[in-house]
Image (cartoon, rainbow, N blue to C red; front, side, top):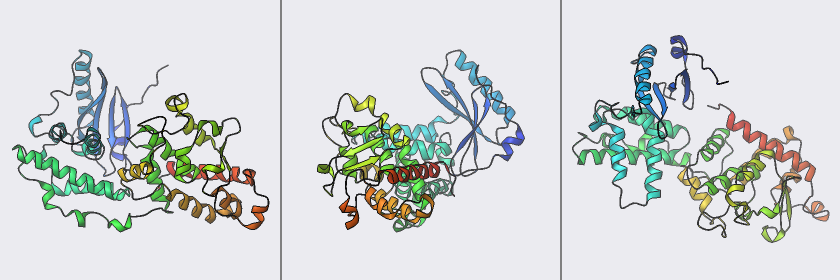
Length: 397
């Protein structure tokens, strides 16, 4: 039986409060109210012709619930007739911010397609939700700055600055074509608009808010899939990045949930068995359709299945997400948090250090084998995995 959506009420809409991330309220009939972090509320109609799409029906309370339903009904009739309801939606397409931005990106012939697509996603993700259907000349500098500062407040300092520059280029394009009167970005001071870069310039972090933001950003990474999956698993295992890059299918025991790294691939030249949690197994399984039958590596290079990810791939991906955090930094993060929480997980410092493959004390050397502390480390890795999952699903502010 299809799920029946309970219609919204004016009271529910009025009482909908802003959260750290945008969220949706469903009225039924593909009518959705999107609530943004700045408190704005925007009506959307979702539909499917050749592909899934959506159009804006205006903002609340300018467009009431009743009016939104009326607009939805009109749009639905067009869809039923095989027409695209978005074609005549904007009354001022010539000055429409989205149309101008799309035109700007379409003319970036001298840039690589990958670079253009990355920039386009920034505008689609961070700017369109607020200004997609606005007349470019109606947008005030303080409005644009407020949206850009939302990005910065999420810990994405570099992303905020890059998006600032992108918006300025779009306005310059609009000015050159006689569409925009002025470049509103020229009245804003980028250096003073955002937090000091030093406050975000970290190789690692132990701040739960920043760590949470990094984990969520990785989950939403739009780049190469192999790189994304390698980044997703790295925080959970906190091994050296080279080990993730060299991870092979033959080293994974899915039944025992153990990853056996041979000594040749370890900095310490000692083999190591690493317990794998259900979360890690799920991430690794997601690569089976990609590389299981075509490569010996779990996370091969996108250039060739016969090669491993390049040395800088993971760090560059983190940089594209707006962080100066390094892939190796997850080891420092895990080490600090795990040692600080010994009273919670009850696992000794020796076992933590062994899991990190650091130099071990003489007593441990005497009994060393790759499965040393395996029971304790299994508990430790389960605690750490649960910690990260809870952190991602929390609502830290």
